[in-house]
Length: 596
Image (cartoon, rainbow, N blue to C red):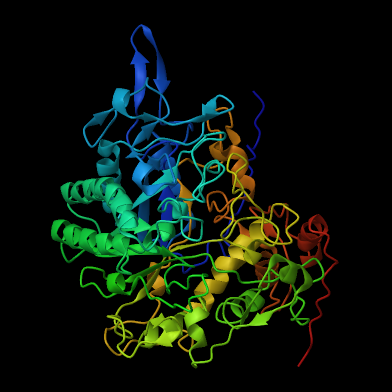
């Protein structure tokens, strides 16, 4: 036998700047695979064994693989929000049925609110495949909450509505004509005919009656999950709903907002169930939280959600924050020639409390195309009433409704600085110019699928990352985020900023297993953090490599994102950087040491 020295190869691995260190919370979506940590399987014995919730070989279940990775790439993670979806089938409030759903009648034991699989909604299909994942069964939610607590994480439960309205549905459109769009946003559920349409029932007793029909089943939906959380030993946070803008703006014959009253009553019931240790809020859409200005020529300015925000059973102002942070064209920002790129964190930060939605707006699509900006002004000295980005003014001032353009003397129930603002969602799609319009989503099955303004539609992981970095850096600055005089905390609770969303399906099996999951193609341009938070920007990676060669505090401006980079052997900094820069079509860097 020949004696040889055995040679083994080793790769030294080090982290650069992975997920922004400030990420302490994420939204977790498990609709397509459920939340069960343990293996769920059918068959065995003489029947073929089939693992229902394991599509990877690295863990006992998809859940375990996904949460393990989440904690690895987010070392400061403290909280997870579990999204649990039921399905609505009509945008007309009185006709909308809310039900838990399944993708198949055959499978493991499943039960939600004592409803078994054979009686649950069977979600619709697109091209012979389920349009959605189903509702996680109650037992899996209890087990998921237990697992998260065992990992030392706080838990927030987020009941969610998906609209299962297929194409060619034949349902009357809210305007009273045409039909309803395929797979629309839940924020469009409203009275029928809707506000602004001919013969609308808005501002009538009929509107209240229609909403009462919806409220009854909606209350059952929310309270079921409040009871389930109590059974789990409690949770740290609970949302009583989100982005139901089409409902919170409907008025009755007395000018009141019935659904807002229903949310107030619901918050009270949830607080009694969950107790004072659970933070309860409503996740208002970014276009909804600050008030309602009907476009009917009345001059009304109404703080319709103020009774909810002032309620003693609501602990914070919840905002799903998808506000635009850029107005970028291929040639740049028409009013900001100094901006290096739309990926510049400084550029994005400069638009958080400025520019579109703060100082000006586009009055039409034509104006946007031509860059014609209309200043946001107000003859009564309160332009912030119309500026959804001016969170500070909204939070720190009394609110006075205006009726027929006349400012009311008596303020609303809102007390300035009385409660913190929580970004119950914040995010940006991984698509070219995503920060121009972060609220849009790419999903071909939906009639509302879209790409951001002026976007080429190409994938762009970096803009998603920079959008989040901009928010964390901006709100961590004391000058941008003042302390309250009424409670011990800042206006925006940075520790509770919750990016959307991490998937309970592990990467890369999702999105690559398109035979298993029908929405895999949407990942490439979507809001998913899965498969992206573990990467880093080209700029951060180059700076870190330069540090390794004792080039410290080098300022570089580079665009690009990369998951991993292997430096094959020791050598010069040029040898380490050249392949990386070529890959991103960047010229070589020139670094010179200067003797002092």
